[in-house]
Image (cartoon, rainbow over all chains, first blue to last red):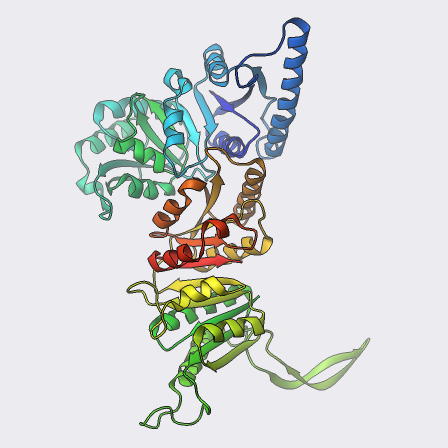
Length: 269
Length: 293
């Protein structure tokens, strides 16, 4: 069973992420664990020591717990297996990293609403949490139905790792799967190439998937600007993508990921 | 709901009538088809040397037929009165055959006004107490009515109610809607709902941020809107846009989506989008524009 950690704050992004994660549990053999981190204050320091500090921490946790419990209770009807959240206090990123290492989670899910500006997504990808995280991450930008998945591939070597992560998560699940290869070009000339014109990478990844009993419904190449391709990929309930930590803000791949409004499963390379 | 459709004799108006018929089919709205012509004293007197009657009156009659063609005769809410003998229960257990006339359930008015088009359209919308003014515009160029400069823009800026400017035969893939985040009215949400149903399209709900965060009230409202549309099986997306980049976002998005902007009295968009910018949006947009009030 896949052990998944969902990060929750008392906000819309977390509410969407939780609803999406609950949808996933209906099709994947997965156990959801939720966590919330209360951050002390802007400086990161708790006041006082001894009982003063303990009382202050308990009060903080109780306030946070109530808000997160409301979020979880709202989803209980559609996701009955949801347990009580783990409440931590400290630096958000450090505590999540510690929790993932301590409990050896297989997948991390968090919400981050789709933004017109790429900066928010860029900062997230380059955050300490994402640089050091040991498992794949699903960034839930919007709440969509997971009836179709797109696996976007770049090159053969990278794709093998991508596919093996995908297979580990979706073992035994039944989804419509499309293989997508992106060719970036100037805007205004969006075009599609079908399976007959598929390149070597697409063919190799398809073969590899078929060996593992996954039969992609479609293998196609999309030619267009990152924005145009991102817009096409909105038809999918999840986009699976490889990603290097060192990705630059100006790269087409990053721009593509920031324009995709659907949830993205990031498989670190 | 009462819809005022301002039309002339050009193809963009014929297209608008078809769209309004679909909208009226979903909403059962009272509809006024309004034609604006040059000053005249008698509609039956020949309007030119060839002796033809006012051509706009004929066009309006054609539009009425085109509008009604959208409805099955028996089910049409605009079908005129029919009279027949029917047994009606006059007392408990006693029926009497009476001659009953049933009128149209909804009102379809065809009106021809002469004079200044801006004044006449606004006057008719005021008299009708319209909820929505719909008009088309030329697809080539910057959204004009033939013979009157910037008419759609003037109506959009001066109307007291919502205005929908339909660009001719442009397939709408998505409606990007910027609602007033802190003061969302049920009416505006339902109007968007109607547009989504009319064009069978997806919806993008824009959340305005101050920096990178949403205000708690805005966040709560966005969640409520999202749940409202999801419950109606409308594919809805949320996109955060910083107030400083709203103008850039709208100019980019208008190339591929229908824009719906809440321009009510208390709306932040009214402050950020003065007249000149609304004009530019209507002129530059490749798709239709809905201004909600």
